[in-house]
Amino acid sequence: MQMLLEERNKYIQSPLNYTGGKFKLLPQILPLLPRNIDIFVDLFCGGGNVGINIQSRKIIFNDINSNLVRLLETFRELGLAAFDLIDEIISEYGLSQSAKYGFEYYNTTGTKGLSVYNRNKYLKLRNDFNRAEIKDNKYYMMLYVLVVYAFNNQIRFNRNGEFNLPPGKRDFNAAIQEKLKRFIECPPWSNYEFSSCDFRHFDTSRLTKNSFVYLDPPYLITSAAYTDKGGWKSQDEKDLLKFLDCLNNKNIRFAMSNVLKCKGKENSILKDWLDRNSDIYNIINLTFNYNHASYHVKDKKSATEEVLIVNYKI
Image 1 (spheres, helix red, strand yellow):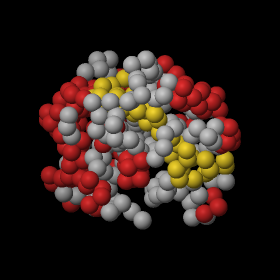
Image 2: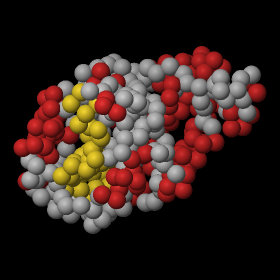
Image 3: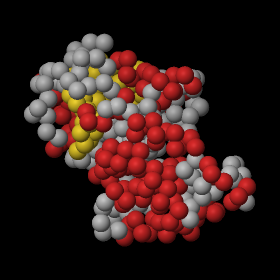
Image 4: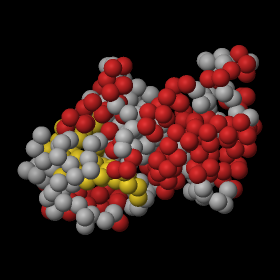
């Protein structure tokens, strides 16, 4: 069952359609998190869907993708002035503005989309972004415009660090503008901190028993792009579980989203770790409902078993 409209409006949604984003699972995840949090760490923040909806004295957004983290930080720095810079970039490259002119102006329909009209303009923007040497606010707003006009509004960089998605069907339409506005206006940005490092290098020294770490790492057995390219391997999974054990030994609470089964595959590393620590860690099954996920299947035997793993009592 899809998230009801009133429930969807209850939460702030990231303006970035990041792979594996947890917006649709927020109604299930957030009630399971403790309320008395002093420092909240969104360790694999992605688009920031979880951290942005948390109330805490300090919220740390961390991700190994430095471009992603810097983009989120740029939204904080610019505030609603980001819209002026976005409009400037759209006009500079002559990209479509369906919210202003409609689809007929571009000789297309909402179903056909705007990829044909935007293609050459988008590729020019992408090339200029990838060749840019100065990484200022405009650079990161160029990245955001690329995301908005890209295939499925996603973020993807090749191994050379170049943004490499083709143009998509959509543009900076009214719905996307409203999503960005809500995200930027969410209070208070002064509580947010940003970092970009591998989880193994994240400094936990200032975390206490009143801190909380949420983890949504790449899933070892799914077919997301980062695992296809070898970006998350068995050793990464093992190191992450050691990291969780260290948090637990320091009495730091955590919750980790993950999958135990997917398309007939089983995450044996995670399962064995949970079996060995069944008296320490609790498993909460979540209802999997990513309607447009590439690994969404009708065969229930091959369905994804998504879970939340915690080290505290619910």
